[in-house]
Length: 73
Image (cartoon, rainbow, N blue to C red; front, side, top):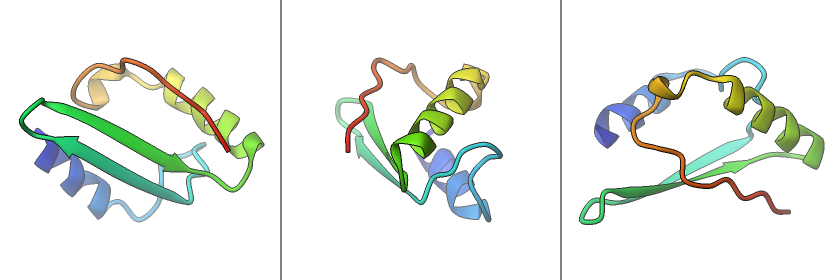
């Protein structure tokens, strides 16, 4: 499941429309079956725009369940 997600991300030329990400990191713990995704943005406004776009997406587009969202500078 994670391998196919990483492959899909690596094949994309740009982030999804409306998401001004400048970088992404995926940290995956196979033994626990958990992952943390870090999304990097240039500004707080870009981060808010990305958050709005991600919340509007169909959850079935990615594996797993979103447990929490934290934002920080």
